[in-house]
Image (cartoon, rainbow, N blue to C red):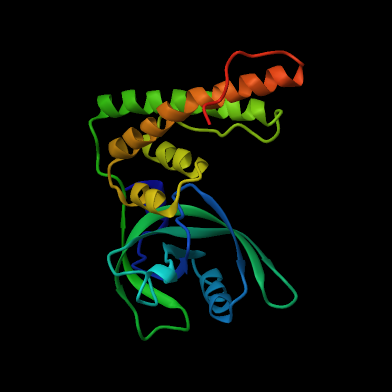
Amino acid sequence: MSNPLDKLRGISQLPIFPLPLVMLPKEVLPLHIFEERYRQMLRDVEGGGNFFGVSLFEPQDEFTDRPAVGSVGCVAEIKESELLDDGRSNIITLGIARYRIDEYLDDGPLYLAAEVTFFEDVPSGEEELTSLADQVFLLFERMAKAAFKMSGGRGQLPELQRSDPESMSFLITAAFNFDNEKKYRLLETNSTNDRLVELKDVLDQAVDQVEQGAEIQSAAKTNGHSKKKLDL
C-alpha cells in the first residue's frame, strides 16, 4: 500500500464537497468556506483526520442534487486553515488519493457524506512505463522552461520526480488548463500508461509552439528579429 493510502487506512466514509471542478492527487486547491453546512463540515473534519472528498458536480447539467453514485473524486487534506471573524474560512488543501462513491449516508449531517472505495492505478509494464515517463518528463521540462522564459523568470519551475510516473502524470495534468470533462477522464483512468500517452499527445502538439513563442518574445524584448511566428 502506498503512502497516500496509508494515510487513509481505516477510513471508509468521507464528507463530500461537490464543486464545479476536478481536483487531482498532488494538486493544491485553495478554498473559501462560507456556507453554514460546509462550515460545519470543516469543524467536523478538523476534529478528525482533516480529510474530505472533492467531487465534480455541475448542477446545470444534472437532474440530481449530488454527484452520481459510482463517480470518482479526490480526497482533500487540509494543510492550512484561517478562520475569519465572521465564521468563514480560507483553507489550503492538497489532493491525496482518488475514491469512488459507493453509496450516500442519508442519515448524516447537513452536508453530503458517503461510503467510498479508494483506488490507485493498476501496475503497468515497468520498462515501457519508464520509457514513456521519461519522454513525457523531457517534453514537459521543455515546455516549463519556455513558459518560465516567457514570464521573465517569474515564479518557479515545477519540480517533478520521473521515478514516480503516477504522481508525475497528475502533477502535469494539474499544470494544464484542461476542461472538466478531459480532466475528469484523466482522474478516473486507472492506467498511468494511458494517462501519460494522452499527456504526451498534448505536449507533442504544444511544446514547439510554446518554445517558438518564448523565442519571439525574447527577440522582441531586445529589438531583435525572429523568422518564426506562432501558429495562432
